[in-house]
Image: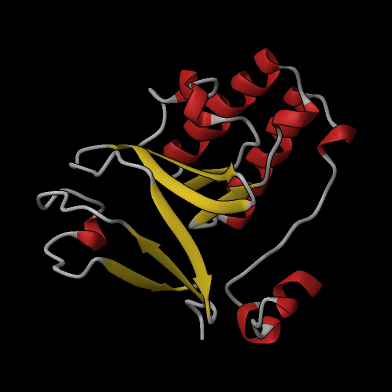
Length: 176
């Protein structure tokens, strides 16, 4: 909860619509964690489920099986599932689960010389044309700003379409 507050959110206002469950995946086998998550999905009936990186807690085969199972569980119950991974999607290591997911977005750091840039790309956006190029991502005054320096001919994420601006802003505080 302290992280939520440190990001500027009023947790008391969010608590009616937000449930944060913090636990260590090291305490569970991948099968036990799946059944725990299944129980949460059935009992809490969330609209969204966000699972922060499990890849470092399980070997690759266990992680991929758990990820596929969670994705299919969420699809079955109409829940939007967001799984994070520390793996480098740019190298294609985690794209083996791409057939089960509707969207794949990669965020990473580009280190060049003395400069570190946040980067973003959309690998997959099912049933939609998307911009597959790499873009620079900035956080300015509490907002996420994505910039690109070329004309991409109208292709892009849904919220970028038909924009003549070379950048778009998205609020990092959707509940305020």
